[in-house]
Amino acid sequence: MNTKIFTAKEAKNNFGHLLDSARANPVAIEKHGRKVAVVLSTEDYEEFEKFRDIYWAIAAEEASKKGYLGVRKSRELLNEMLNA
Image (tube, rainbow, N blue to C red; front, side, top):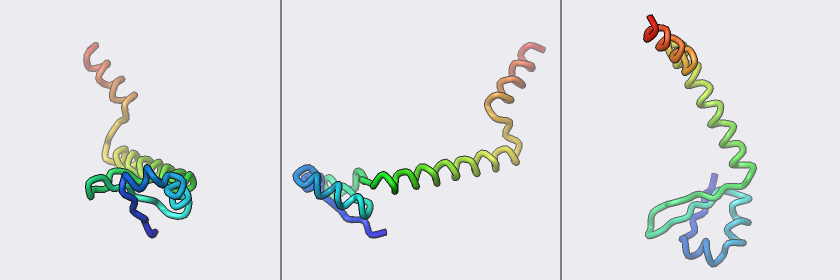
């Protein structure tokens, strides 16, 4: 993916162009020579959200295989231990 870079001043002064550019590819915004934000199309953002959800589902599955009980089961076990 070819990321275009706008300075913060360019982004402010050319906001319509920034939005048009972001529809094709992500646009990085730099302030004082440092990337501070990225503007994405709605489609790219939704795809990112989908992949992020998949990542966390896999991470939760791996944690479960390693013995992580989850919040509800951990709370139940802790309450049992405290009330014993």
